[in-house]
Length: 220
Image (cartoon, rainbow, N blue to C red; front, side, top):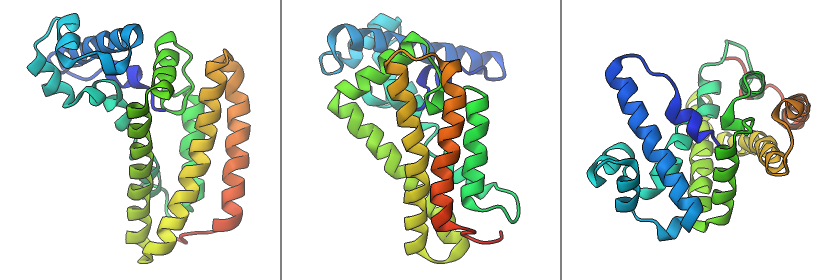
């Protein structure tokens, strides 16, 4: 899971953008508090708006749907894998590009890969697991990430089938490590203690995929 609160609290440039980000953060936090207290399905957008001291229309202007209030910031990371491969260095393989990106995210303790032990992150992770509508939305995000990566690889190679196979393998390796991070966080493990283990797991996961993909998709 991507780090939602990190997404809504990042510091944008300019006073107007900063105020918009603050409003989005207030709506997100108010929604999460209500969801945790009463359950996702029993909270309306109107109630979220009232708790955040904004209008119902403001909530929709910022997030679009009730699901987006909680998961919209997570969606910002759907294209991470595709971006890493698209922007990789000449001659670098897709596996190497994703490995490098992921290790950088570990170093930064990036919440989007499950390396944030804040209480709200843990509460959100548990809420998603316990709410079928949210869990389905996360699955849609994952499949969209695979599709975006496959598009990049297919455009480069001209082979849509193999691009899809490679995209599924690459995203699966990445997601397996993220899921392990989430499992450990919910079990109460310390983020800093997890980081070294996470890097080792990521190396093993990408090594396994690399044995199959080797130099794919070849030189850029």
